[in-house]
Image (cartoon, helix red, strand yellow):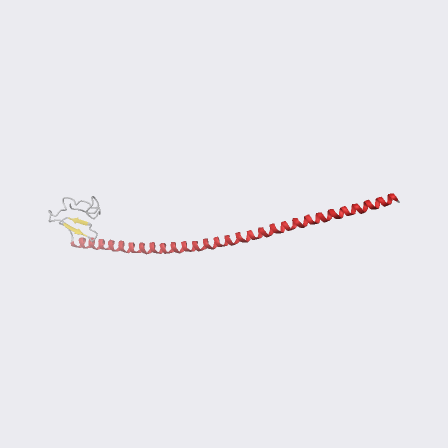
Length: 155
């Protein structure tokens, strides 16, 4: 099959286009140009050599530009890949520090809550003792008052 870049596929899986019938090997008056990528250009017998040379230079220039752009794209992709990896590592370090801080704060808060609960229990115990002491004093006061009243009544 004679090909020209896009219709059909060859053995390597690349797409190819068919040559026009007028640009075949049977028509010796036509000039056929094939570039490195396999693209074919077919011109009639009235081809100007300067035009042919210009077309060949332009094709080579386009291929060179494409190669340079491809290399630049590879560099940019690699740069972004490195930057993304660096960002990911930094985020992981920050996350690890935050998790560590959260654990430390959680433990500290638990200790503080435990101390507050212990103090509250001690305070409740002291309050109970004080209430008991006040009750005993009140009872003693009332006993003394009662005794005083009884003495006064008996006298």
